[in-house]
Image (cartoon, rainbow over all chains, first blue to last red; front, side, top):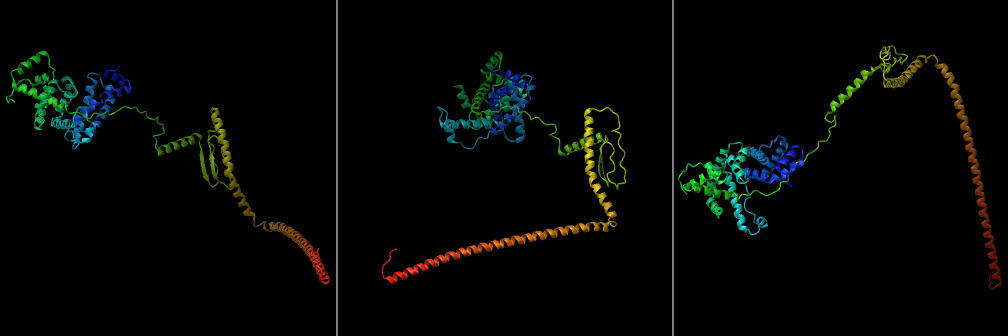
Length: 198
Length: 270
């Protein structure tokens, strides 16, 4: 039987490091995805995740359980990402490698997916990443937490420490900016909308 | 796309987009969308954006982080002490020990003197010394009750002191004897020479006699060896002469035989 986050947190607070390792195994992928989408650099995102888990481990006894453990972990990670962005002073845009390695793509070719489709998907991913880089830190965090992590408005409000209405406003503004940016970059949102309606 | 600006509550529209509104709000939005083209297009565009956002996938990798508790090694109490602190501590211990035993170390013309408070005062170690030793400490005469270990330590310290005094006083006595001998030397020199001369003469005579005996023995031995060698040479020479006589006799016999054969003119088979 799989232990819940609350149970693992309680054991970790009692000094069971292995329970905390279970929490790491459970949350390392979402936390890494959050850091990667927020700061846009894979290696730095890995460092941020490591530091986030380290801080969580050190502060696990101070976690009161008023919010979900994942929300608490998201907040730690986003704070570290914000610090990283302030330190680096560079646009939080994913920097994909120049060009496309056809050999690598062929190795990772998924069944039933053509090579051209993979290249197109990577190009679309690059466009989305650049468009996300246009958003403010607050808008981007709200969109990422909502779109990729499925947090509710209230959970995002808890993570960001802002009222619920502010979260909705940030989401609306962020989606509006992304819509314009994606249209400008040629990845028509309308095309996506048509695909989504199919 | 309509350019008309709608004043509808955008927060409510976002709630409807993400399906986080209750039934009443949902009906309110749907009623508005049925009559507002702008909000309908915007909602469709947002759904298209969400579809595009789904294309953005992060690298799928397992980081493998683990929290590992490391036990700190037990720190020895003296470990963080620097060398100078350890040396200072050693000096303090020595000073405390010296104070506890009332140790006195004195270096003067009479040599090295080490004295502890619980021993008797050391006598002067040199006959020529004129400086009196300092008075004894009162520790030894104090009739305080002491533990058995303290008594044992005192005995050992006293024995050690006596041994040290014996060692240090030996060179001083030697120096004093030499000084006294130097003072009386001019008076007894002739008498000493008178006593030494016969001894030296006797020694010379003994050496001479012994040398003569050894020389005579060597000559005798050498003569005996010479005689033996001569005798052996004579014997060898006689043997050589004997062999020569035999050869001459054989030669004469052979000649006589040849003469007989030649005179008879026949063949002789031997």
